[in-house]
Length: 111
Image (cartoon, rainbow, N blue to C red; front, side, top):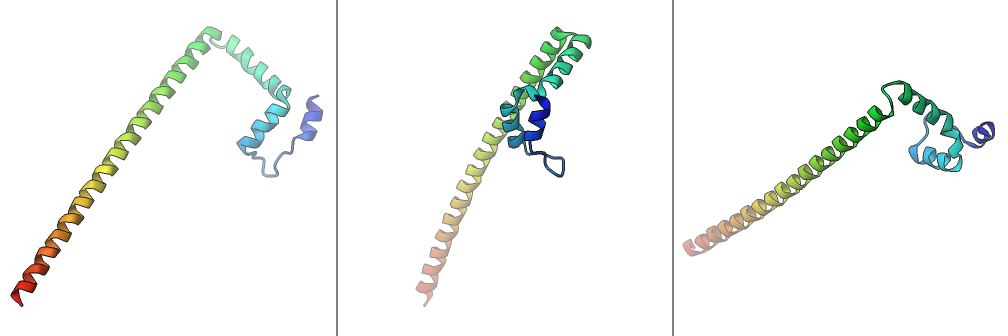
């Protein structure tokens, strides 16, 4: 079964496969990665045990979530700052236009 699957999978010449291709191949041949999955499970059983790995993955997931929240907050702050800069630039533009108009009227009065 694995040999047939390997014949059907087009391996790129450079040795690198785009993730979407890898994902579609894994869906077509789910049994292809089973040996690697079994090795991982055996290593988890022998090194620290399944309970430790479950806790480790839980902490990893939590940390990843916190990082994503922090990134989202940073993006929101950047958006607020961008809007504030735009407002200030519009106010400055309007002030400079007003000053220009005042100077223009003064010049006309002098003539």
